[in-house]
Image (cartoon, rainbow, N blue to C red; front, side, top):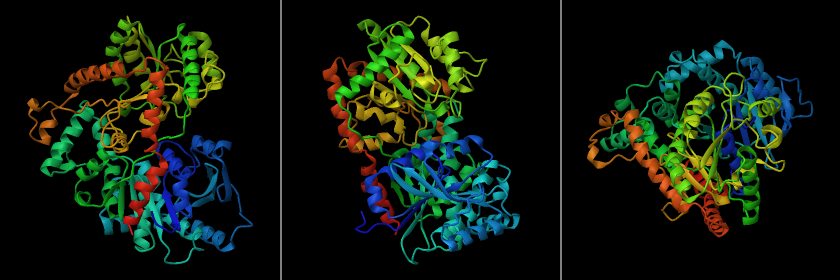
Length: 592
């Protein structure tokens, strides 16, 4: 850690104004960290804003977002008492580029952090066309291939005005001070490109990779999933060939084209060990670029055994209210309803575990908390469905209850699982908000989201693509068994936090392992792995995972106390303060 505070760190992200997903969770972790705030004097969050997205605007101005607007030409905030030179500079940029700014603060963990958002949907043609020309001239980025894509244009348009606006609001800072400009994912790269085009020496530029979009595309888009891709990656790295050489040219994919230019940054950060390999596999500048591992942190708040038992009691009561009996175990999986989360693997493990629990006279309920609806369901609909047909135990696909992937998962995976099962029930709670007001009358009145995490005996998370996976190990400090897959980026951090080995309360499902007698000699051999091959590997591996779960599930409160102490020990070594002090700040120092 530097003995002096870093004068300025700028985070460029689509979640600058409001937390929407994973990057927002990462920012919350950093900005709530005492180590971060002790080391960084000024933080600014910058990104684009879409005023036509009603959900985004609703969340932006929701009371819980704690937004304070100082200046906004979008909403008529004049900032009459603001610094005249800053207001004048922002207005000049708006007039020249035909954009609109919102500047203010957001409170995160009790601290106010500056935000600068831009609506660049109507950006002047000569501004964006000149910018595209310079991107092609300097780095070979052919924007003409991708400008028909709305997402590509939305973030590219924000590059020049965001950089100019950033210079306007930081003009009070003395020249020559250390400044860091961090692009979170490819979406944050355009302002970094602008900084490098305007003044190479003004900022130290960082690309913070939260995923490798091309890897996600290849994993999710083929039936061989992670089994195919990561074996091809492993063998490709051994032969020193790149992703495009193995899987074909992906220059048509706008995210791929953007990420390939991220190598121009002074430093690259990767959130997990597998991602570091994925970046190297891209080839080109990534083969030798300086890449630092900067993991995500996990909750490390102290949870007592009494608190865990109280939360568990609420979960058991909810299960009893739904099914008419009190199970012995509560399992959970809190996730998004997307293919990468591989929810079917939970079911495969439970198919084996069900026999084991039934033989012991034990039972369990798995709550899958996941929805395809951006904002969940209206509370009044949930209460009506609960009364009419017993939501969330039962669902319908013709009334707004089940949407998109939810319907397929419920009717084709969950319902067949329950045919003839006695010991395990799976409940799909496709709603945001873990409380009675959002989830119906059968949920205990005292229930909160913290009880969902603290009350679980086990958390599933066997993803096919997971750059880190905070949710997979989030209940670790509350004494839950955690079951991620071997491709989850959090596994590397868990190993480091436990002296190089996986602790007993983490059970890893390795769906990538291929027996040596399969004789895969090259990455092109691995391309033969299809859904049938993966199904066979999953059948074997899910049985092994189920056996480990059966061995390690707590039998009594003494076991729960032991798992709680072990989980808090490991989680304490994976906290956000640890991430900042041991990984993030040293990586910034190496960029100097």
